[in-house]
Length: 335
Ligand SMILES: [Zn+2]
Image (tube, rainbow, N blue to C red):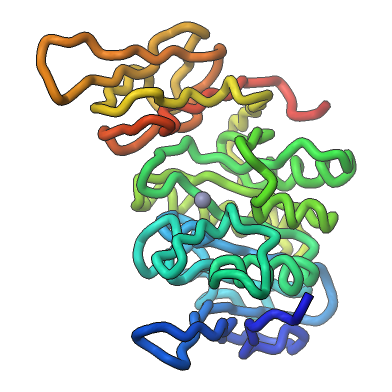
């Protein structure tokens, strides 16, 4: 495989604070010899672990983008021991457009891993993370949220892994993030995720979902900033005390029955609240046909008992959309 076409304007081995770019050459109508410019900050203070902090994997998930932009201008080398690499927007064309995917190539970055140096711009970005940035890190925190189409109960998550020691460390990282809810997450398709690439390299990966609706709130930003600081302490990059939610709860997502997905198009009425408890078989949503009056809605039911972790945000709904995600509250995330 050839080298990545992406070049970096920062020196990853230099002490101090550097702000710069990862530059991906892209020739297009508006700029024949142009480039996608991915902002990056590297803060290093001697030897120690490396924490890789990323946001904007999806361009309409603003909690992570905002918190990491703020951190990039505040973090000093004296605050840490080791190295912190901050990429607030992994896929800038998507973030600039306020969209989940890149308008340049329709690429969904978190479905493009491990990537390809000869692929579309989004796949080239994925490849750079896979072969250059992830190998540099010991701990990776990827800040997601619901974006424009989902609203999600704020949580940090890890995954069940074949490597039990890595699973345990990742679980501890998800708990250390300090959100009220920590989850062992079941992904509908993990094969092309950033998470999977990080985990396969034996690195600790904590992912988050921190709100959504294509916006942020004072509460979601405060939680994100606190969680990032907690993650740096957990990683051993920063000294300090973890600040956790007083009553942390643990949630498992054992299988696909957690997801309630639409088989109809129309108008969505939610009948369960985010964070609320539902019973298996309970009506969690109704979909109305908006092309006529006098018809009954289609009802959607919970596939299991549990807590409502996520809901579709826009009221207009199509076939295949995820309406509700239900997790199972457990006493511990240990196996
Ligand atoms: Zn996302």
